[in-house]
Each structure stands twice: as C-alpha cells, then as structure tokens.
Image 1 (spheres, helix red, strand yellow):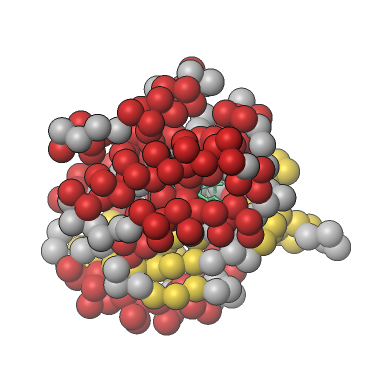
Image 2: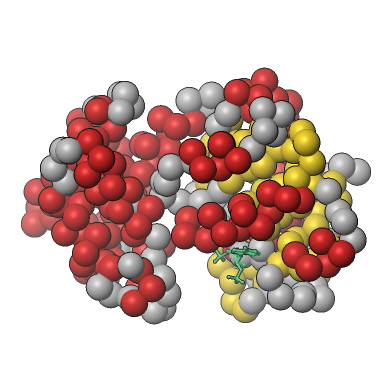
Length: 302
Ligand SMILES: NC(=O)c1ccc[n+]([C@@H]2O[C@H](COP(=O)([O-])OP(=O)(O)OC[C@H]3O[C@@H](n4cnc5c(N)ncnc54)[C@H](OP(=O)(O)O)[C@@H]3O)[C@@H](O)[C@H]2O)c1
C-alpha cells in the first residue's frame, strides 16, 4: 500500500487517518510520543491501524516523505511546514488543510518545482473527547485543488487515488483559490460575530447584525477585487446567509474556541483582510474592529 503521512493527531487528521487507513499505510507525525489513536462511534471505540512517530523518531529513522497531509490550525502551519520540509522527497506532494487564509508564498517558495502543493478545504466535522480519540460529527463538503504548477498536473490523479475514495461529497477544483475566498467570506460573516455574541449561527440572521455582515463582506470583496479575485458582494452575502440557515442550530468553530478558552483562528480571517487592506492602502475598519474584539478575548490570539 502507498505510504501517507499526516501531521498531528487533531480532529481532522484522525478523521482522515480513519478513512485512509484502508487504502494507505498511514503514519501520524506527532509532537509527543503516542502509543495509539482511536475512532469512537456510539457503538464502539476502535483503535486506528496507523503508526505514530514523533519528529525526532522520523529524523532518527531517516524517513523520507513523499505524501503528506498537514491538517493543523492556521496559526500552526508555518512551524509545522518548517519542521516537515527537510523530510520531503524531491517530488513530494503536500496537502494543506485548515480554515481561514494566509499567504502561501513562503511555502510555495520553499518547495522545489517538482514538489506539489495542494489545498483540501473541508467542512467534514470531528470532535475530540480526549487527546487521542476522534468522533465523527458530520460529512460536510470537501474541495481539493492545486496550489502550484506541478500540482496542477498531478491534481486529478491524486484526487482519484487519495481524496475521492476517502471523503464524502468531495470534488476537485482547479480554482481552489477562489473557492477558499468564498469560504473565507462565509467565515468572516459568521465566526467573529458568533464568537463575540455566543449565538448560534442562525441567530446571526437577525436584522440587528445585517449592517455588520454587509460591511465586513463589502471590505473583503473590495480587497479580493483589488488582487484580481472576482468576488461579488451580492453572491457572498447570499452564500453567507444560506450557510447561516443550513447551520442555524450550530455554534461556529470560533464560538466554540472562545467558549472553551482556546486560541481562535481570527488572524487567518479578519486578520488576513486587514493585512491585505493595509498593503493595498484600502480601508477595512469593520474587519479591524472584529479582529481587535476577538483578539482581546484570549491572550494568544494576538
Ligand atoms: N474539527 C473540525 O470539525 C474541523 C472541520 C473543518 C475544518 N477544520 C479546520 O481544520 C484545521 C484543523 O482543525 P482540527 O479541529 O483538526 O484542529 P486540532 O484538533 O487542534 O488539530 C491540530 C493538530 O495538529 C497538531 N500539530 C500542530 N502543529 C504540529 C506540529 N508542528 N507537529 C505535529 N503536530 C502538530 C496539533 O498537535 P498539538 O495537540 O500538540 O497542538 C493537533 O493535534 C483548523 O483550521 C480547523 O478550523 C476543523
């Protein structure tokens, strides 16, 4: 079976491991030694047939990685990639997966022209009752696409071999950057407001939040248009309200992070818009306000 490495033993990483272990020899690369990881359902708790190695063990065994998924939080990506890079084979494929956006230039620049970079955007849900166990909470949708030139040539084959058999409702998109911007807009409309108010997604449809939702998305579309991403405000508004309706009874991931006193991914959402707006010299006061408000909720958000 082909080898597949996954960075971490997070909720998404364990869900992917559970689905890919049938077709791949899966190794999780963990920060701390881990004996076993588990997938729990209402009926049973099953040990996953995967290997767990620390970065130190990986280096000692001089293992070379040709396929790796990096499903870490947006603020963990830079460090994870720096640690991963020396282990990659000359023609490795690296698949990033997280919420929010950040410039991928440092990563694309660090990869050679033979190393493929891909992005997997997913709303498949997982919840961890403890540090080594995951529970599946919902299939969601997944989009997979290439982020550099060589990845464009390999995307269809990798999608057919790795993503499609493992993930429900997955599709391949060569315009993954546009789809990530659209998902970012949904996150911008829902996550900060739900985190600050503690409300379920559906309650954000109330008229009292409409001006804020409109303003935040207007700034995001303006910034996107300045860098050539063809977002339309009317479409992003419609998408955001549709997701609020479809997930009306859910608390957003950021609302859950705040409720559990965890660091949020606000810097990869409003922070990304504010940073781009500053570079472009265009205003983004509403994203700045939400960024500051959410940052002030947790000391590590800054
Ligand atoms: N959970 C969901 O249902 C869900 C759904 C869709 C999208 N997402 C998005 O997917 C991303 C991952 O979410 P998640 O819920 O899976 O997060 P998570 O449970 O916090 O998992 C992240 C994992 O990555 C590990 N990690 C980070 N840096 C590492 C490094 N340098 N070396 C080794 N391991 C490292 C973490 O280890 P430590 O524990 O040691 O920090 C943790 O096990 C986020 O952007 C999230 O918003 C999540």
